[in-house]
Length: 398
Figure 1 (cartoon, rainbow, N blue to C red):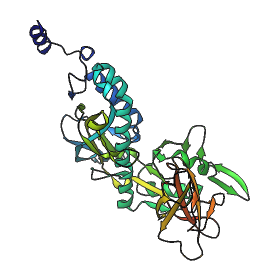
Figure 2: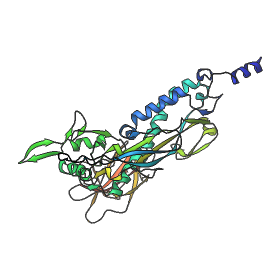
Figure 3: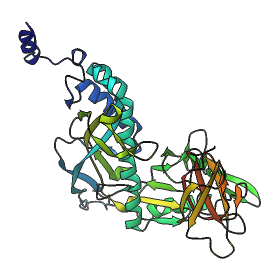
Figure 4: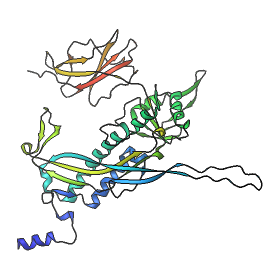
């Protein structure tokens, strides 16, 4: 009887994820319904996918034409022939790259039905994918593609070093309009909003015009997309009609119970070992294409490069204290300020940190293990010139 039942399951005409547990099917393609829902979540949350044009792909590579230049119009005298001109279309090739995520979970998940399992995992998979994709395509972080928004601004020389002021934002737009591109959106971060609210045109001490609309989250009438991982003080403008993406295949998955995960660590810094810790790891892969066809269509405004400080933390002399070391040391008459907390943002160049705590560069700091500490090197006006952060490791109590 068992064999007959097994044969019927193997040769059933329609696969039903409601009748199969993850233990029975540890690898394969994510069921179509959940593949669609995950992709929908990715596309709705990815900043690139919100702004770029979608190009259908049925393979790893896609050749297509994009509209580069339109036909012209001419004045015509009575009885004269009308001149003709052609629209300019250029051929490009977009190549998809494989993106993978690994999500550890409890071994109990093996007994979930496939439908229940992917319903639970859907938001986690989607978040991992869109964050990784946006970091690569916008910020050029671990980027497998030949282009990124940040890389295009550097290649085109469309960068301005300065604060988020009314005049600087207009100058950012001018970098594009001078080359006959139309900025149609901005990429910013919510941490810029307090600064943008003060970006005014002022004449004789009176605010004439504000460039940022807080209620609609627009700059100069154009929509702003907020990227959480973007550094405060940085702003991108672009003609996003020149940015494309595509998704050629569905997602594949595999569950493993015995691997040691080199990229994931426990609280003590040791690698996560699935077998020893009775865990399961879900690996999901998808293919996604991305390309920018005009580097000159993007520009960047930034407060300038911040001096990078290497900050380390070790157990201090007294319980609850940490020994902090910073390299390179502060230069000239600069001093240090610090802040302790959770998920701290790095300051931007020129930021005033007068309200932070003074540190002499040598004394132990009282801070709780597991918190973050940011050390800022600042000038005599308390403006940041360099910064770094690390996780606190303080001396345990008796």
